Image 1 (tube, rainbow, N blue to C red):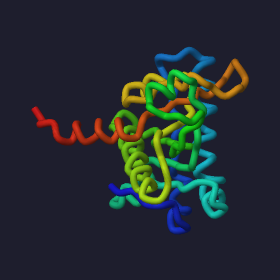
Image 2: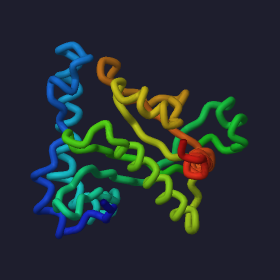
Image 3: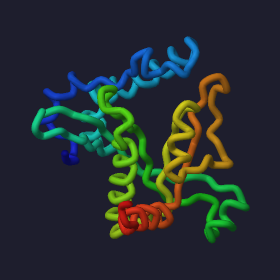
Image 4: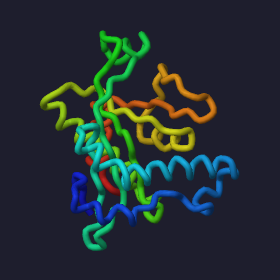
Length: 200
């Protein structure tokens, strides 16, 4: 398994990528929630198939695919772009930031093939994104790792350390993405502690 920057050689593989969950995988949700989740997953799938490479060529984002080399298949992908988030006064004070905005690397899109869910790949994609942010820091400031997600994904992102921003974008109330963040230093420290802890 390895990460590679999306390139022309990956394009023949994208049609086989499917991240729309089955009804069985969404058994804990009612019919309305399942339709909404499938719609969002379909958008993630279409992004990889129809938009990711073209937008990368324009310099709008950089997409990385997580590959199973043996099977020559894409198991997951993450698309990254620059970001800056607005912070409330108390958030700034807590983080020691004097500016009203803070620089960040944004996880613009993240999806795992439906056949590979619950294997820790989503967390691996976030960790990979944090390491990319660390590399970017050699040339430009990055304080947070950010993302927008829908309500059904909030608990997952909170479980790996993200918190909801106090300042949320103004969007439609019936299906609003939620803006979240994690401090890059604290997240990298969390990864290092996990790697250093003995396996029992």
